[in-house]
Image (cartoon, rainbow, N blue to C red; front, side, top):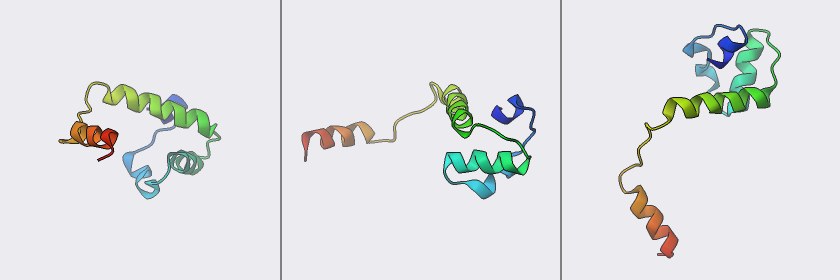
Length: 75
């Protein structure tokens, strides 16, 4: 989505070699297509898109609330 906004058509396979830090992923994919991008803006936009996609869909892992409660008590 973010790359299409700047006129680059990418595929999921473009990202597979770069499953690392977000900045590195965007920089490498942009570099592949010869695009000059502001990595901080691209990273921020990616997080915005991700937050929109996952909104209301995340569920806590079983036992997560109990674990956090235990951590808070110092046990």
